[in-house]
Image (cartoon, rainbow, N blue to C red):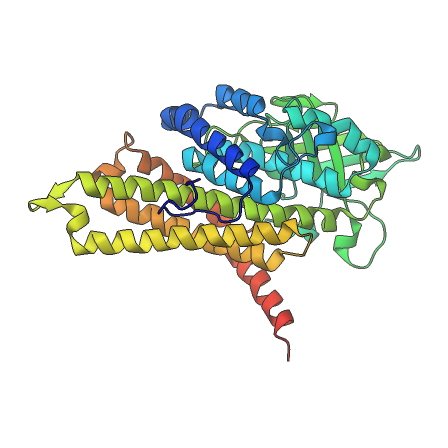
Length: 402
């Protein structure tokens, strides 16, 4: 982040010295360890093993985990600002820690004491990495329609069968929080959903008896990080694997996790937009046409003005949503607004930077080509733009009811 008083975009007021130190460390890490290799690794669709190892050393995997479990005990705001910085370097790297962070959040806020003691110390060091799973091949955002089922057995365990979809870090993770249906007999479908914690071996193929990760899904962008299916075929889970120990609370737990996940996606969009702006404004000052810098042509100048305004607006929305959640208040409205606006603005800023680059923006040797393929994922991750508008609209009607 920019130093206090610096005339730069996306500055954040009111940070502590500790927060500033963390962000300066992350920015240096991104500038020296991520940006120089991001495009090469992305084109190769290669998992960033060295980058992840460095993040473990820096303590990034434990940034929000309390000190009693070996973490840094920092806020959602600190985490979101770190995500901005990391996404500015390479959005896929932020995806590696996002699902990890959501699982840690679920454990901290909904897990039993035993579950917290078992998992959080290893998560803080990055020894154990998290993924979470709600979606299925046929349901998309309709979470209440989940069909993967955990049927109770006569010995008090559960047998899980079904197919999950779109797991970020599905192969590389070692702990998956998965939402499944438990037939409890409630009239409202979402009251029959339960979150199970599944510890597995990282990798692909059969990773546990009854659990298979078929392989990576080939994607347009968001490469390097693995996105997978998860297939359960008679997997036996004991009652101690239920998040919080009580079945039927999974929907509420996951929706709580998704709120912080949407702040994360908004932060990612803000970071990608910041990088696109940096690339666009630099190129506009280097490239000349008709005897002057293209930045001095009014058409390009107007683009720069719009890009900078959108970068600033997106960042401030992220800060607002994160700070509200840190108070313990409900932030689904603010998180939805931040995710919706930041992802839309990110797409706009990336496209404007692409236009400023002209034909060179289409060449793979230029970084903007990678950002142009990455930005669309943010429009659909953690709920599509249309889902966000539904959430925002409903909450506004609640707040302004006649």
